Image (cartoon, rainbow, N blue to C red; front, side):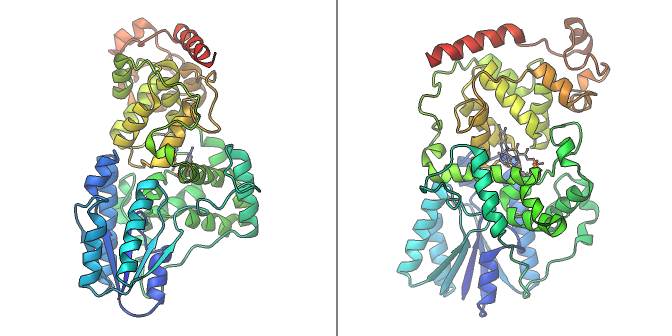
Length: 451
Ligand SMILES: Cc1cc2nc3c(=O)[nH]c(=O)nc-3n(C[C@H](O)[C@H](O)[C@H](O)COP(=O)(O)OP(=O)(O)OC[C@H]3O[C@@H](n4cnc5c(N)ncnc54)[C@H](O)[C@@H]3O)c2cc1C
């Protein structure tokens, strides 16, 4: 019996563990361990946990329909999981175990534990890289060390991919994947369940999107919105890359969109190389560590009630949908850390608690980038101006109107920075501080820390 252990790779297509197990011949069973207590312990949002569970159930149905046994093991954490899965393979007389690699510290420890038990029980274990463009650890400087700046990391990865763009595993011939037309009324939802839905979203985005032009515009659907699917592995980065190469040739490897996927690899690779990052530590040793943590500012930020419309729109978008546009993530994170002087870890936690695409490495990287504590981060004096950023990236105020409906009646000219009177008329909060004064105060505070 070959056992495939699924984790954050909830798909049939480009799933090397499943593909190799089926290729072996012989019977195959698939197991998925629902680790909700562990996911909660890791601070993941209810939305993400439910999204992942729905994908696991969807996959279970597809596999069972095709005669492949699927078992869901419930309610585990990483301490109880190894013995439960061991009990499972003993009961089912498994001889080979297949799974795709995970790279964060807790997951690596869990997997090592399982590998040790499997070897003790004479199982043959096969593991595969599956969720990144290249496996973490494979893009390194000549001396073998990790890059601390994204651009040279990206250049090295591009040069490697131009020589060997990798491949994605097709759905194995023994498994059928229902075709895309079965999406029907589910398409009404923002992220319909299933890997076909994820692939459909990739196709739609590639056909209709103008990424280079609109990627920074939260008022336009200018980005792929694939992050929830990538976070649970309903689609892989390799599938995305191979699809783009099939349409645009090898130039795709150097496109702006693929370079965003490389940021995802970069942050994962940093966590792989520097386990201190998963222990709440800043990348830079000299980083600020006595944040002011004004709880009134923090509370207003969390609730989308700061009085800065673009910031409030972003936070409310996340609270209602579980997702926030990247440009606005940068603005709200800069606002919390560089203007409210609140510890980036408090913002990082709030994001994880609400995001449907919560991904430890990308979230940690984004927060450390924004707060000037990270590797290749925005410097402390680069503070995004919420007024001018709002005018630039949401010119008509359409994004603000969607998530801050109190301001519906204001013109495109007034909506970004309403007057005190307009706020009262619209029943919208006053600003929690005067932006210019606060910025000066914070810059001096940062400078004093540097000296
Ligand atoms: C403070 C902060 C927190 C973040 N937290 C997360 C998180 O928890 N999960 C997450 O997936 N992304 C996170 N990001 C990165 C980015 O905002 C999202 O990946 C992006 O908004 C997802 O939208 P999309 O799928 O339309 O992206 P697209 O623009 O279509 O990009 C395609 C894919 O590339 C990857 N990607 C794009 N930008 C980045 C980036 N800056 N860093 C890492 N990967 C990127 C994502 O997987 C994304 O789905 C964070 C960014 C910041 C500034």
